[in-house]
Amino acid sequence: MSGKSRRDFLKSTALIGAGVTGLTTTAKAGPQNILSEDRMGVLVDTTVCVGCRNCEWACKDAHNLPAGNLEDYEDRKVLDTKRRPGTDALTVVNEYSHGKNSSLPIDVKVQCMHCDHPACVSACIVGAFTKHENGTVTWDTDMCIGCRYCMAACPFQVPAFEYDKALNPMIMKCDFCFDRTKEGKLPACVEICPVEALTYGKRSDLIKIARDRIKRNPDKYVDHILGETEVGGTSWMYLASKDFAELEFPKLGKNPAPGVSESIQHGIFAYFVPPISLYALLGGIMWITKRRKELDEEVK
Ligand code: SF4
Ligand code: SF4
Ligand code: SF4
Image (cartoon, rainbow, N blue to C red):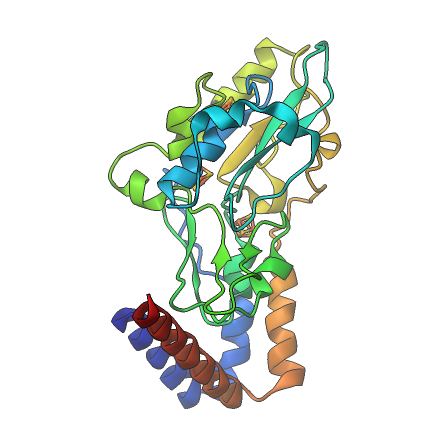
């Protein structure tokens, strides 16, 4: 655990110890709304995407995951199987049969949606997930205790768990290239996309661009910007020539999903273990997790 993480954790434990009655309220409250009007997003236009999978390669390359050669991604056989983002690929591209007025297949890049009201943030009982003002949802590997509540809570089934790692298994997901965008760079996938199927910009501007495209090309697009309102809005949004349910997006309402995760947390506090015992337990698990990581580093 970093010094700051440890301090924050101890601070929150102390506060909890001082006021047990306030804990259930805090646990049910969900993340603080820190969303900026200027928060960023990406508009994915699936009618433009050609399924080259360069974005998959660039994402791995930017995150120190085994990426192989870019030329190998020209093999389209991979697209015969539907895939989900995982620990070896934070984004994947899937292919579906043609849509409105086109005989071309539809290619859909999938990754974390960076929800405006992220269920993963609400679900995480040690605060390892953070929603940032610029729209990004990140997580802190040092704080993660591997409980996998975030996986259960995510309405898009995004967080992946390193089941194959005996030591220090981690949750993995797209971090919206937080380190790159902080330096003013584009997300790696956006930068490499050869046909500008991905547009990075202010979320509010992206919605205007998307609406304009639909208005100008009613025969090309279904009249729906996926992510504009789903689960309270997401930073990543999609345009398509086919109903999104046929592209394997879950059908979700406008209400933020954290209600689901709040019940997970509430269930723990109401029926499982008393809060102080729980936090003492979590403190122990976090210490063990940290110690394992240190031992792992020493072995390397
Ligand atoms: S898509 Fe899932 S993992 Fe990503 S921010 Fe939303 S709830 Fe969290
Ligand atoms: S934004 Fe970054 S982390 Fe997310 S899919 Fe694109 S390259 Fe990967
Ligand atoms: S790089 Fe662009 S065109 Fe190629 S698969 Fe990714 S989003 Fe589609």
